[in-house]
Length: 292
Image 1 (cartoon, helix red, strand yellow):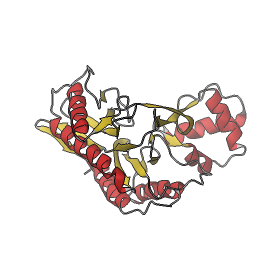
Image 2 (image 1 turned 90 degrees about the horizontal axis):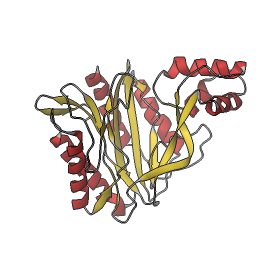
Image 3 (image 1 turned 30 degrees about the horizontal axis):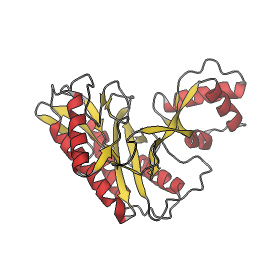
């Protein structure tokens, strides 16, 4: 089922490459990507992320988003498929300003070198070294505190991390494991790390217990039953909820940590970021890319 999930996501990936972005509503981009996934008989594993310039991850449109993709930016589109809980994850970068094209190329080259280096028994930390050396050859810097991740059924981040810099990350690849490998690249003069922004638009369910008002209790149960363990957009819940006072009830759940948000992640020094990502399964001879 991971393979089927990946085939669907590969088709969505090709669709995303055809989307016009410059000057387009970010909300429209998110909804088109998520709609394409649904049209192919799958669910979104997480809300479509649209990361503009220094935004590296976790931005998806709120329900009232009026922002547009700038004409001359670099934009990352990160999206995933869940098929009966079997999750695959991919991302592409589009350089709407030619000045950013070399950064996009560096991210894609680092991804390809990382994929070629995956092998059963190999240390996860070795992939970080491969990514870092490749990115630096292109004259850029990897983001040190964003990583790839092991994937399990219904779980996008399943414990093991695949770094983008050299280090002492514990763990090794094992045959049959599924991973998202995702180099993030920024300018050589940048901090090379991300920090939490001030906002969150993506959430995950933690518990229903603790909600106090009837509306919040019902909303917590709705979120639990609808999205289970996977991340969801506040926009999705808002648009699907048939009760009253959504914002009040949702705010109560956030305050009580019945649901928790993923802060928007931005490059710490405000520099632009590129990303490339595929999901792979580890094989006896290396790996097979599921999302190509």
